[in-house]
Structures are given as structure tokens and as C-alpha cells.
Image (tube, rainbow, N blue to C red; front, side, top):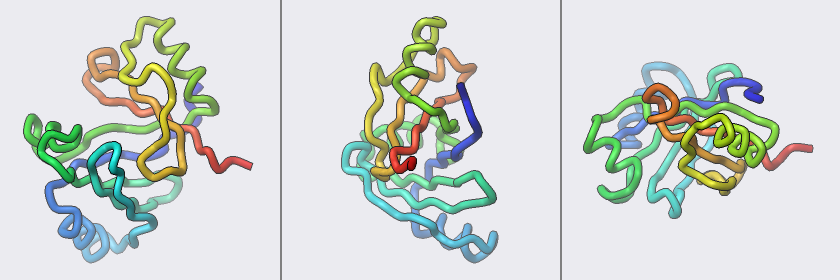
Length: 137
């Protein structure tokens, strides 16, 4: 069951320029910055209330974010929802006829979450991430 929106993932060509916009114009501060070797991207996140904005810059043109930018340009890449159990949510999605990108949960690029993606062909054109916080107490 979806609990709340976790974050919006935005694909950008220049992470430092995007950070300058979010800090200088919008008055936000980077909460977390990391490199995800597995996803071949560098990312930074900002918090607005309970929602996070995740800026993602590809490290390689043929990475998932790099291919996204080549096809669609910069902009909204995905929406992420918090769930209690990613494995259960992926199973329920498949049983309902939803195409999943991930068969089982994997560690998120920031190392703080377990994640799984639903294919946009099954979710009205929106790449959807399911996210479980592994730091739960």
C-alpha cells in the first residue's frame, strides 16, 4: 500500500547548475549528495516539507538517466512512493498485471532505501519507484 509521495526525480545535464538554481533561486539547501555507480549517475536531494526533490545527472550517455535525457530532454524522470515492503508491493503489482522493471527489491543509489520500479507502459507513462526506508527503527 502506498503511504505517501517520497520524492520526484528530475533528470538534469548539469548537476552543479541545477543545485545553484535550487539554492540560489528557490532558497533550498542540499540535504544529501551522492554518486550511484550502479545507476551511473550523480545525485543531490533537497527537502520541501515531507517531499524530496532528487536531481540526477548521468555519468555516462548510455546510463538510464543519460538515455532518458537523450530521448525526452531534462525534466521529471520519475515519481517515488513510500511503501512498507517493496517486495510485497512488487509482487502485488505483478499479480495485478503491472509490468515491473525490478523483479525483486534492490538497494537505492543513496544506500538508504530498498527500491523497485514499475514500467511506465503500465503506469500511464510515468516511471514509478516504490521505496522502503531501510533505516526504520
